[in-house]
Amino acid sequence: MFERLALKFSNSENYLDIFLLSVFFTVLSVILVHRLVSFQVGQQNLGGVIAVLMTSLAVSYPFIRYLLEEEKVEISRDWEETKLLERHAHQLELYLSFFLGSTLGFAISTFLVPKAFYTVQNQVLETIRSPTGMVISNAVFEEILRNNLWVFSITFVLAFFISSGILFILAWNASVLGVLIGNLAGSAVKIPVITAFYLPHGLLEIGGYVLAGIAGSLLSYSVESEVMDENTELLLVTKDTVLMLVIGVVFILIAAVIEVI
Image (cartoon, rainbow, N blue to C red):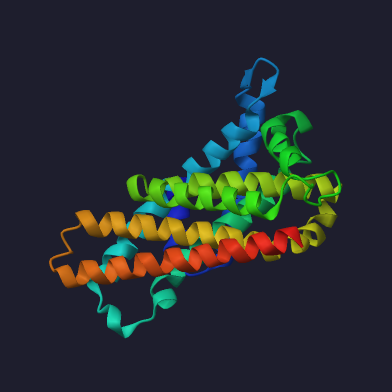
């Protein structure tokens, strides 16, 4: 039922519906994992990781089914009639709606489960931020940029081989950001204020990952697709792929600069 509902919304251009559905899927995944799947290795509670897996799996089928159809239409279309971001705008907006909704869902869920549930996410946050939220001295610009570019590269490669991989990466980043927002907010009513503080660099960084994912899945589909009859079309797809990767790297660079300011 949930897959059909998600597919219906992904086929529409009502991004508010996709956003709200992502919030619902995320909160539901967290509650189900907390109540039904107690996963712990030694003293390490892996509930937060399992919740990320469930969230990404819940939307992977409808999202990927729809996006593969979108890529087929895009490749068949005369690309000279549209601009780069116009061609891929719907995919970009779809992924960002999922990320924002999932981030809010994880932020809300921090008030519904014990802090130990997000042990892994909190460990990640401790390695890159001080309790006040400021970047600590050893997390210098070069290190942040290198780590983000590494995730950017993994996203591209993963999306090339497994299109749904981008959803896991988005859900994981949403969980880390959502837990951070929930920890700093202290109460659910303060979530919008804290979220607004992290949106500038967060959206640019995630936008870069999304472009890498779109580029990887588009190139993968075009290489094996029967639609690609002519070398000219493959060259156009390759051109789009390279341009999206370049724009994505620029987004990652700007996001890193904003993060250390």
